[in-house]
Image (cartoon, rainbow, N blue to C red; front, side, top):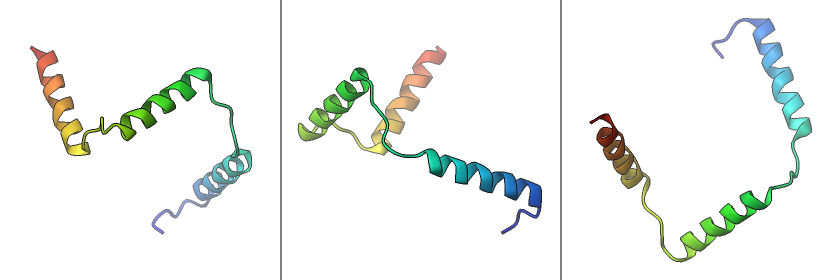
Length: 67
């Protein structure tokens, strides 16, 4: 609503429209399929952490790398 540049808006519309046309099923590699299967197993076995815990652990890890 705040972008007034018509050329920019038309280019953005073209980009969005063209990517929508190309969307559809795509093939996963064997490695991607394996990672998804491992993720499903982790979820089924309760091996997950909350987003807040992940953020906290990531910040701790980053701080330890500064030393």
